[in-house]
Amino acid sequence: MCFTIRGSANYIKNEKGYGKVKFNAKAVKDAYSKAKTKKKHPTSVNLPEEVITELKALALERDVPYQTLMRRLITDGLAKLRKRRRFHLFYAGGSGGTNGQFSNRTG
Image (cartoon, rainbow, N blue to C red; front, side):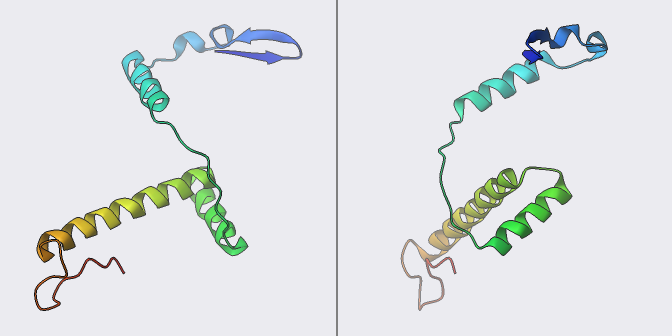
């Protein structure tokens, strides 16, 4: 890792206290390889300003970037919908259910 300050390159290993830092090299390598293999596709979503404001406030409370929180909310919501869909499809036998008791609707 390298960063530049006023035109000169400095290496993190030269920083004061670097030798005292303990880390799990295997965990770092695993995290890097996992992050490298999971590609993200940029997308654009038009949301009302009040939704963005609320997301930013929630993200600030959780100390995460609001885009990260938004991505997490979307992926968690999708996981819940998948789980609900599997439940309904299982009990409905893949169709509308018996006597309208179960349906494939997710609403």
